[in-house]
Amino acid sequence: MDGETSCSSRDSDDEYQKFIQKMNPPSANKYGILLEVVQVLTELQLIVKKAYISSDGGWFMDVFNVTDQNGQKIMDESVLDEIVKYIHKCLGADSCFLPSRRRSVGVEPSSDYTLIELTGTDRPGLLSEVSAVLTNLECNVVNAEVWTHNKRAAAVMQVTDRKTGLAISDTQRLARIKERLSYVFKGSNRSQDTKTTVTMGITHTERRLHQMMLEDRDYERYDKDRTNVNPTPVVSVVNWLDKDYSVVNIRCKDRPKLLFDTVCTLTDMQYVVFHGSVDSEGPEAYQEYYIRHIDGSPVNSEAERQRVIQCLEAAIERRVSEGLKLELSTGDRVGLLSDVTRIFRENGLTVTRAEVSTRGDKAVNTFYVRDAAGSSAVDLKTLEAIRQEIGQTVLQVKGHPDHRKSPPQESPSRFLFSSLFRQRSLYSLGLIRS
Image 1: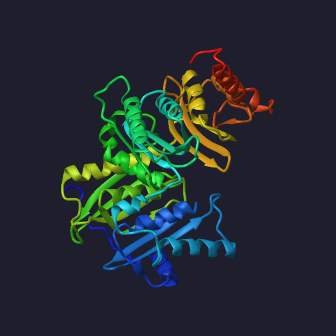
Image 2: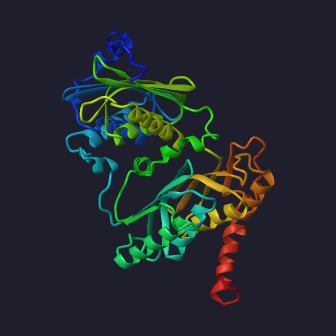
Image 3: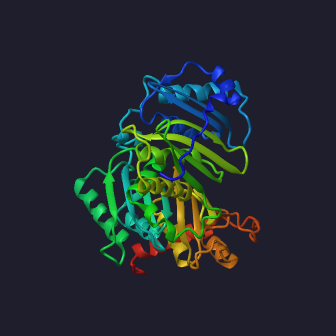
């Protein structure tokens, strides 16, 4: 294979040795353990600035330099103790993690909500249509995350029954939900490839989204829609034949969860990271991994080498914020997501990524949007019209170069919610028709 290299050993790295000397004895190694560790650090909202990864035989020893979300070193001993306890709980002998690939996704039975997974071709207004169907089917969206990449879309949604607030268990109703969502996701082209699953379970949402888009082969459409990714990531894969490793090098703009995204993809492709290093202390991140397939072989063909490169580039790009960021915070209610996304659609905005969550009785949602021309520089008049309809204090615009924070307005109930409730009241009285 082209690009063979005689990569030098990392044993001479003084900083690595210094960290190793401070470490406890290594822990038992197993396939996927690196992803489990990185996933736990991600759940703790820790930012990895440097990392050193090493595993030999039945043991592994990973060192992570981390900060809090503000880039500050964690000095509070009580906070450090809680972090250590959480890591032991997640990765210790009584850990909920199991070696199987299915469990690493985090799937287990739950009576709290129904889990919906959707993949298919992206198009304007798709999230609005899906949300409207769920509202019509008496479903309340509790949490959801939606990614779009290379004309493909994937969504993981947690819904409950509108009346009971619990998971939907009726098999006929679940089949009807699946049928209606499949119909919507296909749109006008009934031959489009889509996948819809409706189950009762728990999943690690971001972990599952990576798997869904990889299974959907979004990386194969990768050259057709990269104009919004600037700068593009640089990924290389070469073989170190003396040691039977393939060496993966990644250089790209740093961002939160980058390490999780790349390790997740390598694991999903059934590659094991034996050694590696990560440096993201500057504006760019550098990652280097020494990998083999689970069958013990390095990357064994040019076609596979290109696939690894494309899959890693896709993993880096999926989470890139391709759009203007809008944050919504208000009291939760059934149909909220449907109403908000409908307003976006009616004003010519397309949602490229969404994070929907419910905290107690409050909805906290983040949307990344583009206008009809595909630009994130959404017209200010459009934004203000949307905020007037939804509520100035409910919807905040983040990152628009020309947007100025508006002064507090009257209660948002004057806008979206009062008008919606009034409209529904008129509908119930038969004064208007749907």
